Image (tube, rainbow over all chains, first blue to last red; front, side):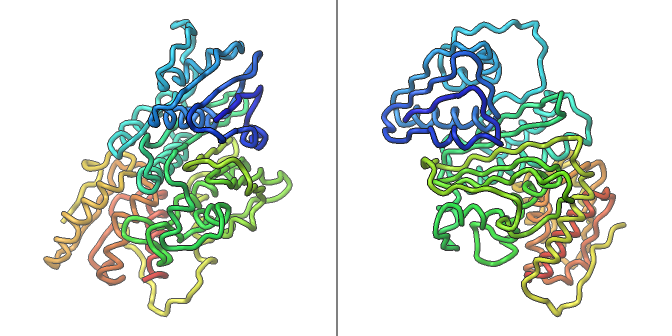
Length: 322
Length: 95
């Protein structure tokens, strides 16, 4: 396998990076990088880590060509070389500002996730109302990995806050079974893209055919997260198997409206990508644009109501708050 | 029975495993004994939909929506109220 870190990879321009990923020989992973400057979204760091760990598990060869780019320190600080057990020879000045980032982290169980959520928030130096959606996204995405991915190396997570744009970018990646495999037990997606769109549809989960889910899964987590990105007019992408679904930025002159069918959103997709074992999720969240979380919940509630496929004649009862 | 959730899950209620444990070991036995259950969200700042689903959806599925005559939600902030309302609405659609 070969993967190259180019000059710049963000969710908006990630397609060429993915297309360049050569999966032909998994006895070796060769990682190369742009010689002058490498600037990447956290999902890219997570993907590189996931591939590296996958190669380590297989006892195959990991060849990470020495980085020359001026920005190589960033990769050291994010913990890429440490997590892959590579000697980078990159020195970091310990007196540098801590920055606002969550370094690469591997989460393999529920209690590690609990600890991670508690520890990560101070790293971002954000206001409490700003961290709510971030906690929400990471918790739901990582739990998806822990429950459905069957990934030996767990969930790989990192995030970066960009002060100038007041945007948090998050990546959560696994090298498990992928969305299509997870859904094949109860649904019959014809390809990876259909599997992804099913996973994004509220009420559909890999644990049952029953709309509304089981005692443990409602099939709502990804829909909530996509909704956050949509309301923030930001990117959200899922890459699994050979397909990628990317929610595009909602046009500024158009009021964002939540839609239960992901194929009716403003999106792009690809179906013939190099095969990704598992699932990679990336999201950008501009904290200027993020609605009050309560308002978002009102919108989501509205979508659920609209999406009702069958009418239930039973009289509704409401929870009683005391 | 007043179940103080903060003591069990902290200020961000997201751990579905704990939600299930609360449901199985505290809520369901209390309901079996015909007791009323108060889910007390005092000091909990937010929760995920997955947590609330894991906490209450199976109650509705097993005991019907009438279970809400015996389950109360106390000290919920607006966010938590909305998440509970969403979960209860879709569970009523699908039970």
